[in-house]
Length: 85
Image (tube, rainbow, N blue to C red; front, side):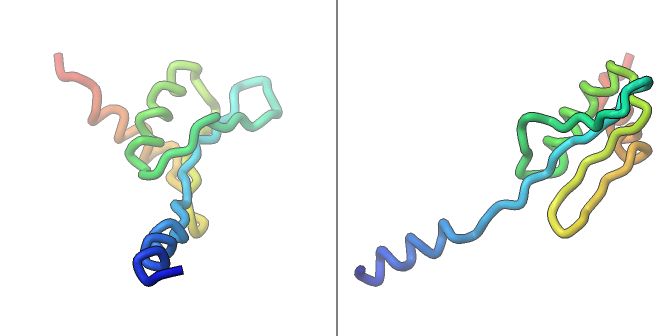
């Protein structure tokens, strides 16, 4: 393997830790999880905003290193992203 191949290989060794959206609905003991994962939290929050239409009793975003973005933060972000009237 030449030096160029080793440099290229190293670039692909860095794993992107995904963000996922999880939520619970009223009357359900199951925790739902987004089928997609997101490379950045803002994309996960965009999806979480659409989940709010289901009126979850709890919703959060989990990320690398134990990051957890709670319902209140998500809700505020969704409010900020709504088009003004």
